[in-house]
Image (cartoon, rainbow, N blue to C red):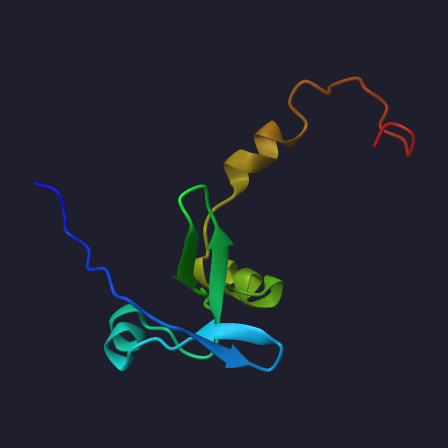
Length: 93
């Protein structure tokens, strides 16, 4: 069964030298839109997406990984796999 999406007619409104649209409050709530959106141009038209601001910084990523206390000993075995006998100097890196 195909999901039916609603189509809404919106007007372009002047904003300085540009134009914009007003999004209904119900749409803002439904999709979690707040201060900014991502606008993607596609072959079918323009797509508005929620901006995912929940990405971890490198510091927070490291902290989250450290909190997991994973065992990385298996990685040490494969780190130099296939490089036995190779001299690794600055020119090889």
